[in-house]
Length: 129
Image (cartoon, rainbow, N blue to C red; front, side):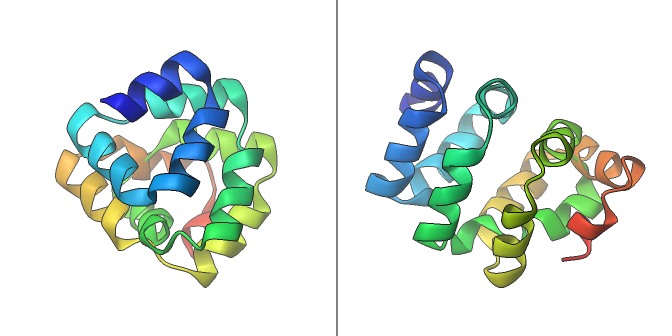
């Protein structure tokens, strides 16, 4: 709850600080408990560059197989952001690391829309990492 409120009220910078200071588990728990929409909206509205730097610098292992699983589940807003922001560094980081915790949360939450969208949007280079 706390992280979602910060993301919604303050924008992505606060989330970056939380990721660096607290680690990924807090945000993973919030995604599972609160749902993904606030995070997606902030990513779209604020842009991803700070999060990309944190992912690269912090080595977010939990955060990575997520994109591979998105092929099976679907996440259109994130796909649009990846394409629009040109986030190839994120794809490289995701390939190099691996993200089972977030993936499990997404699968458990039943976010099926997330993956069909990736396939439909033609993001195979992101999906096939």
